[in-house]
Amino acid sequence: EGASSKADLVLGLDLNLVDDAKKTGLFAGHTVDTSGLNMPIDWQDDTFVPFDYGYFAFVYNTETMPNPPKSLDELVNAGPELKVIIQDPRSSTPGLGLMLWMKSVYGDQSDAAWIKLSDNILTTTKGWSEAYFSLFLAGEAPMVLSYSTSPAYHMAIEGTDQYQAAPFDEGHYLQVEVAAKLKSSANSELADEFLSFMVSEGFQKHVPLSNVMYPVNVPADMPEAFGKLITPTNVLQLDTAEINQNRKQWVNDWLGAMTK
Image 1 (cartoon, rainbow, N blue to C red):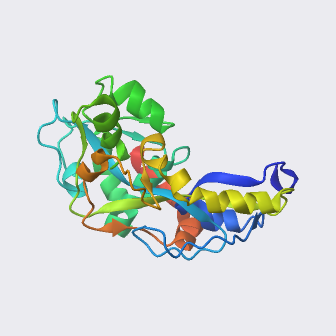
Image 2 (cartoon, rainbow, N blue to C red):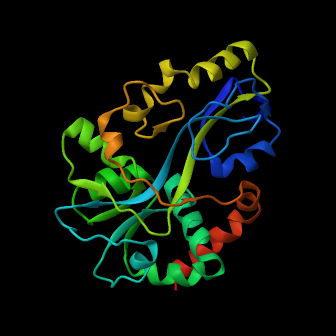
């Protein structure tokens, strides 16, 4: 739709795509004070407002995998008997996140790492829901690419700790979800009000169990399950401009490695 869009806001873009989004020229600056937000990075963007964050992780079934890999490298070098489900970086945010995670850990050697990991990949789905709900929870594989916060849903809603995220020694790649106002908005003031409300406790208290992510403004009644989640020893993040410049080539490299 571009500049002719009837929307006032775009909600749900990923941090890894913001540089590309800015270059469209479709977004207006915001007036939200983000200085007090509780995040693992210092947020100073004047266009995009964050509303939640999390870390990509491999979630495993503790009943079928009592001893999960302790690092990304251990997973990459595991024997072919260990099967995981991942998502496609061309169509899935976690899939893109894993590609960047591999790049941040392995750098120029990431293609070789992907070739090794390909032996362990049961399947690559278009989206997260198919991988997690349709395949992983159905028992098709003991481990799936997801988020470090995913176990919170099972613990808080289902009352089970059967599904847990494996903490990896190298650290975990950060995801931040953001919103922004469109320059073409016919309701500019209302859009500004919504962005301000979005980081208030009234909105943020619903984030943990609705989005199953960390809120950027921690509510007083944070669900107990979030205190039981893994805490990454290292927060991994590539520069957004570098991602925008190289994403297409990295995806092509991924495709090449996965088909060898």
